[in-house]
Length: 231
Length: 386
Image (cartoon, rainbow over all chains, first blue to last red; front, side, top):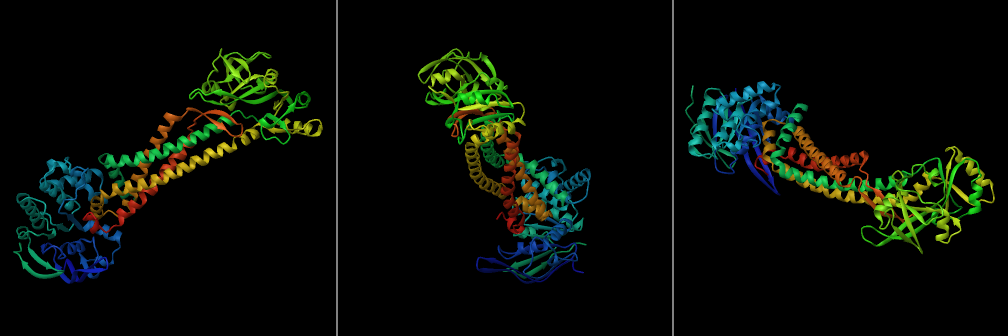
């Protein structure tokens, strides 16, 4: 059974009097444990597709179903609750709260749960350990390198144990070395922890880490490559 | 939901020091409004207190029928003698109310000062009046005593100095207090000596202390029944209320007009500042929403932050007014009496409460629109910083 299924999805934006057709009659099926890289030129609709799967945007037409939930039928507050349980977000510029320590940043999604403070702290440190940054728990983002900040962001994304990681150009702001570390980390999360990952990237080398690569152009899937699927 | 509100609000408040600059603009802006409002209302309150604090329900003022103030009244000495025999009168003081020109302490320019000729019963009628320096005047001599506020507002009223009033010279022999009332802005002299010096032959008013407040009706009836008396009986609280009404209304209206104008300005300043404060956090708020925080807790948390900043500003403004204005003595012209009345600014609890309410209202509406804007902009737009 499909884990993520987009059926005849259309997404239009109104820009003044002009209607911009971002996604056109798009169909996509992903299975649990997939690692998908979405590629394509700027404006091709990659981020829009990512946002629809992540539940922070709604399609103009068509159906988006994720883990059995029809996102089009959900209210704003239902979607927020669903996101907190199902999706972990990784952004290009990390989007860490600058005044919070790494540990506090990672703890944020757990504030939406009923966990006690001590348990939240323990889980946050576990997530930081997973990304090899436990020793930087008390550092604020400004005291960390770009690669370290992105690892903190990944720790935040996985701390509530979501099934899906939605990554928007996670290596776009990093040097090659840091990018490789992040991609290796994502691979580990996919292979060892079974996270389903959808990653938008411009970087073909980054896309090589995914199991599947899809190309978008003008809102249409134009080609796909099936990477080697690990057992 | 409440848990989310609490947690986001706590996080926002912890973050305040890192947004010190923008937060302090809100605090100082609202503090300025509240400070001015409190100062103006403290002025009105002080003025009212000065006029009203001397009022006692067992005292009455007798004026000529048809007169609304002491300046335009006249009561003959035969009437005074007759009234002294009426029932209910415990003590009485015929008084000559006149205005003299004396240079002001700060500018040296001449201003009106009330010179009140009082009878020997004046201190019995007003037991709150107390000599605090020097002594009382001796009847028949050209001596005066000055209220403490008059002595601080006008030149030449130090004990032992001489002051020229109209065509004669008077020696200041004492200073008196009168429980903070407007009498403290007057100089007092012997009634017969005043009649002689100011070439008058009748009193302008008669002050009476009654046996009890209940004697008011008895005295009023006795005066109304005697065709030889053409005077009206007014209770002291009513008289003072009428005397201060005009200026009190002017000060209050002016105060509120200034406060409303400033509050509108502060509201827009708070709106602008809160918009700026929130806009610098657009991506941060969008990230929280993407993670799963709902819009309502975000609105409430921004509102809480705005109101807390406003309360801080209000407290700062009220404290500033208290420290710099409470007890500060000023003098103004009382149009009802054509004379200077000195009074202390009175920053009362009620005024501070009103100022804080004003601050909270500004903070609430100043934070509302930016909060709604931050919480309901599409997440995808906000994540791009739009």
